[in-house]
Amino acid sequence: MADERTVEDRAEKAPPISAVQYSVTGPTIITDATVTMDGPYHLDLLRTAAESVCRAHGAARTTVDLDEGRQAVHPYRDEAVGFEVHRAAPGTLMAMVDDLARRPIDPAALPVFRVVAVVESPRRLAVHLALPHAVADIASIGVVVRDFLNAYAALARGDVPALPEAPQFADHIAHRQAVCDDERTWREGGPGARAAAFWAKKLRGAAPPPFERPRRGGASGERMVFLRERIDPGTRRLLEEVCEQQRCSLFHATLAAFEETVAGLTGEADVTTMCIVHGRGGGAFEDTVGLLISDVVFRRTVGAPSRRAALSAVAADAWLTHMHQDIRISELPSRVEEVARLYRERHFRAMFLQFRPQRTGAGMRDAVEGVRLSFPPGQRAMRACVWPGSALCNVDLVADGLDVELMFDRLRWAETEMRELHGRFTRCLRAYAREPDAPVRPVRR
Image (cartoon, rainbow, N blue to C red):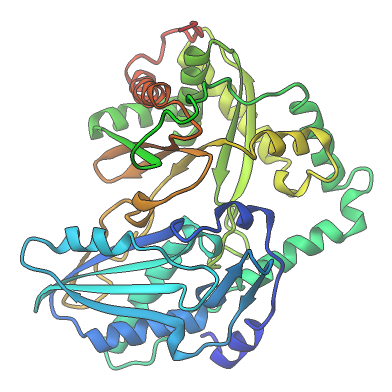
């Protein structure tokens, strides 16, 4: 059980803002999840459960102020939780959740932890939980949901919540800083020296895919565009079977299909892809709430006698890359010119690929006695996101298939080309499931 006094004292640390945080500190860049509850509920206990989570996790009371160039982890106080209750007319529950979720959260001022209960009837409501992305990644929101429901279940039984103690986000930042400051990291044969040599060689001559830029002043309407399509459960099962046969994962299939799509669309077979990974790997920080994601870059010359062969090549490359993840690529720009150039080229606009297993709520459907819980997939808050210069392609593993989403800034990316990218990528994922023995040959558009 976490000792609240100890957690609050530790939370007074003020770690520096990380490079990854700088890129996602915007009031509309939010990590969130939704829980629906069918059965009896107690609004006062929901509030108390939210307060328990805020006490346990320093990230839930962390502010990030880019104007001041600092972040602060505040001791717990009641106003650190933004708990709200709203009423929805019958049949409008999720529509109201969507509207409320899309409001911004100022990452520089408390409360940054927003918990919204939307009541549809005496036996049905939804709870939306949200934190700025600068202090919580998608794995973190799963931890928040788990601890929130466990705390609520304990309170409903008349017990005191006993949330597990986990290292804090500030501890993670301090740990990464200590690794990078340790001279042994950079000695010959050390993990930093090995990573620097690996990335210098891998990225030599690499360039972002040559996507078009929109005509200046030509875009109109909402700045961010969101494209979505679902791959059906049958196709997903076929894709999983192919991956099992090739001893690889759905992430490898996602990356292989994306590389094939980009090569075919741009006519450039040398494809460099920036991926986002959650950066935990089952270690000490597995249950930490914070921004633990990291960038990982893959570069391959696209082409193979079959898609099966492409999957095997991608899996081998991913394994080799994983061997150099003791030092993150975002920690190398000051030491490796090729890495510094990579980030400079992505300062104006950057494209990312992300595979998300969507584990939020896993094993929690019966966590509260007498209440049926469900976990609607997807991030509702991000549908109002403004992320200047970015294009983010997500593949989400959901109960009834795969969701393929592309969000992009239409001021920096040509809309017609991005729509073509999304359509081709979705079709290519289906092709890896249904035509795995077809050759991979980049074809100019």
